[in-house]
Structures are given as C-alpha cells and as structure tokens.
View 1 (cartoon, rainbow, N blue to C red):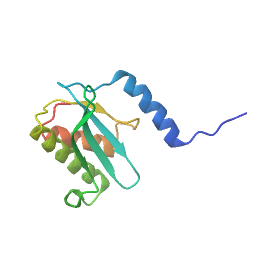
View 2 (view 1 turned 90 degrees about the vertical axis):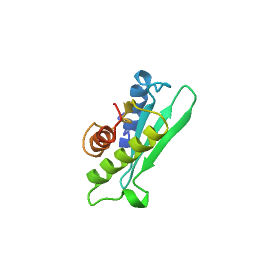
View 3 (view 1 turned 180 degrees about the horizontal axis):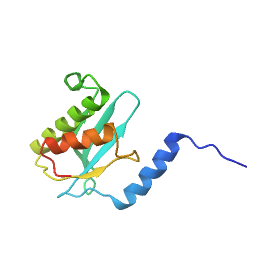
Length: 118
C-alpha cells in the first residue's frame, strides 16, 4: 500500500535529520529559519540554555519590501543587527529543511551583509 506524505511532513523529517548534526552553542548560536507561504521568520537560538537571543520576521511593518526575496534579505539584516546588539557575531545556519535557494538564501545573505559570520 502506498502512503501519501505531505510536503510539510517531508520537510519536518529533513529538518530533524539536519538537527542531528547542527546545534547552537554559546559561542555560535543557531540561526533558525522558518518559511511560510506569506512570511519568513528567523531566530538566533542558544541551544545550551534554550534561549532565543534575537528574532525578526517579515510580519514586522518596517521589513516589508517589494518582492519576497527582498523582504527575506531585510529580515536577515534585521536579525543580524539584533544579534550583534545581543553580543553574537557568529552563527550556525539551520535552514529548517528548506533548500538553500530563494528566500532562505536571501535571508542568509542579508545576515552576512548585516555582519554575522555564517
């Protein structure tokens, strides 16, 4: 019997495999990315203490841009700025099971432009 698995279930499965290898520490927290159909979210998480150090999303009024890729770049710059204010300069990218392409790539490039070392 063939089972139909949803795209979301497959993504969560990929994300759990990625999380086996990636963990955020105090020196290099994890930059976690979540992408929905309309918005994109980013958090800098210290997994050793379980705390979110910085966060940004495209739902914020000042981060909206003309295209979704430009919006993701603005979110990356914003999360980088907030992480630098929290004393973080280097992070590990957790792409959340998504391809490193499009909005996820643009967010990572925006974080690099903002001064984070990925």
